[in-house]
Image (tube, rainbow, N blue to C red):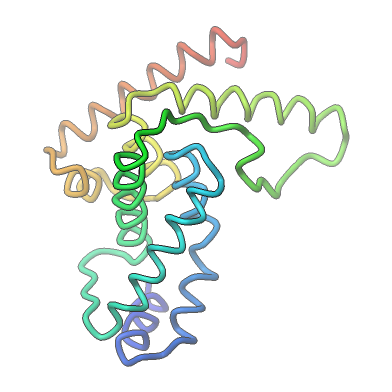
Length: 180
């Protein structure tokens, strides 16, 4: 948190090293969020690039009232929404779109893990858009329900309900897939 404030201050003073550090620090998390939302690796990369280009162009005017990761997660969600509206795509999130680094060493374990991950991603892709956003922002984006509610322009109670509905639906879908 302290490092983030320092980086934002440096970025506002024009430091491209600060921008590079922010990118290195949050790239993977943001990519996971956006690919889960749009379901396409290339579109996700475009969204991620757009967010960081905008961040660079906004240097000197950036005001972050919460945490930097939450700010960037909100920006990536907005960009994903815009791109999906523009391209009116159906979201599908195949497992190979994500770069999962922590894979079990044994081939049998990896196969089981890949199947489970694939089933989970398909279940997440099957959630209604609002529920999927809340679930991803809370679980992966580490945003609070207050931040998510502000992002979606709904009450905190609504954001919390959407998360609860998403979790319940995921349980049902994963139970059908025999994963829980």
